[in-house]
Image (cartoon, rainbow, N blue to C red; front, side, top):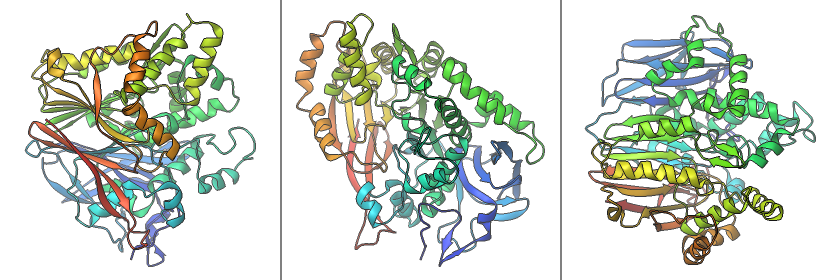
Length: 571
């Protein structure tokens, strides 16, 4: 029986023992990008090392590079055959360190894509890192990601092609007991950011807590992952408004916090998102690629400079990316760092980001997914509420009205796409252009995949064909993976989805400066509030999405069962 380490401790626990692999392999391996012919595998080591992936009759290797005295590698594997399974092992300087010889899990395997198999894409967001025991199941619920991992390991679920983690992979501002203990071991926890994260070293420890539970670690070693940040990866309300930005930058500890957040994001999440050809075009990865021996390249200063520049000039670097998944395409959009926050000009995407998005929006695929951490189509009542608040916070309003609207925006998180009406309308028109067949054959569905809001639901544009659309336009939300919403707030969210739709539309229609949505939508399924992980399954012209949760059976907290919570089919 697998012995679970407390809060995802290092190494592999088995019958009370820990393998020697934990001494050098700090975290990983994570299987990140997988295509028809390529794959990338990410690792963190405790010291400089030559990292090798052994599969079939060949070995592919790369040297570690340094960031803030930590050691990482991303191994790029090419010349793979489509639709093929490649069991693999990981070696450091020739020593096999993964899988552990006594691992209770099946072999780690790269599964390349093929256009012959319909796409299956798992997705979800918002996952806190606390132990998997009865106490924390009572306070945080069962980790749906871990329950999904155990079901896959037992062969109870069909393998998806990838998983999209759509924000809040880590919580830098809501720390666990284990994280607070680490912070207190290195600085005065009563000063500066206090119990929140302060720098890169603390981010590194937070990722270790998030990704090192044995079951989740095995899942991440086998299931390709695509990721994008949201606010809690940095701080709650990150880039909500110009006022928020000004206030946070006045705090003396914020500069180092932001550098740690964006630097660690580049290392732990971003580089693994990119296809090898996209990776080759990244100027910072180009510095890594020059390294020929372990520890030769130190990327600390270049990445610190990048983080500082991105905060001042969001258009200077792109975090968005795309992935082709056989018969579908996934466009992942940065809806946090790319914002324009000038008082007289608010936009979710800066001009360069919008141009990039426009270029990616093409048909000629069976289904098109748009990954954005923030739901594009909120519950209609909430959308109208946020649109009204944005208008009331504008410079044209009186100072008391502006202050009240801005305070409300920050306190209850009114900063989704609906609170950036200009960008919302622009993106909607790009979606409709694809749906009408103006940019190639229209997909059967155009589906926004999102998280953030700590409840799940499906929304769809009402009778989209009346606007010339030949695609179904859908919003599917899966949130949280593990961070349940307080019960009182659940009632409010349910009201915004149903009972408050007409009253808020009435208020919106009468609010000066607020235009009604050109393409109305309705919530067709939900909301529900379980810890969930969802799977979108292509079935010809149909798209079926299922939501799954973990359930403790007979008091066995270490091995929760995976149960289906909901299902929705479009098309």
